[in-house]
Image (spheres, helix red, strand yellow):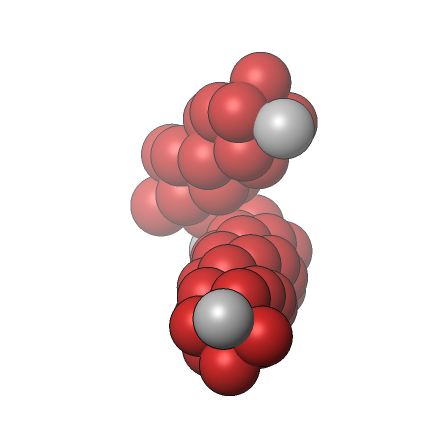
Length: 58
């Protein structure tokens, strides 16, 4: 999981560096960044739901 996140952030940085020269990579970098934020948001929500569920069952 951590390796996947690291790869995604590397892809975002790589596309931003390419985008600064070409202008086409910015769209791809924004999509990659939004996808990374979405994955983190889902992960955080899942962890919070799990904590709430575990507290309720006690």
